[in-house]
Image (tube, rainbow, N blue to C red; front, side):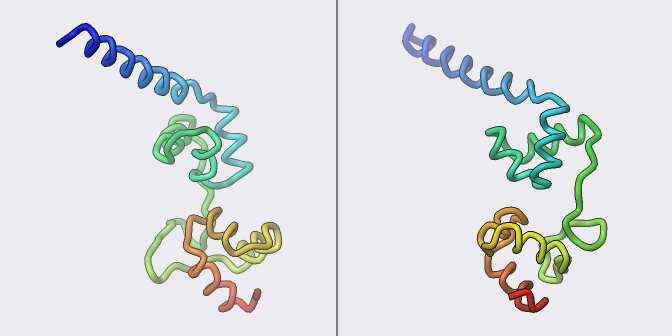
Length: 122
């Protein structure tokens, strides 16, 4: 391995370790505040610049309970998904956009539109 190859490899390792250090320095108060604010691991991940897996890891590590946006205890992406009418209405009034609601609930706009029509919200 040449000098430049080793130098490049070292630079790559340093960059990766810097990213890991940033992710590892997520404190409990910050992730709890963001998760309570957004109630979505995807939005928290975007805010922190990390993966949703990292967010879930820290939520579990700090014993922060997950919020369930749907009826029942389990969040399912199956075709029999039942979205809560009150939640959908609240989010639609808050955002005023099917697209924004779909991003927050991590569902397609078509699915959100279907439920909004089913519940006669739009």
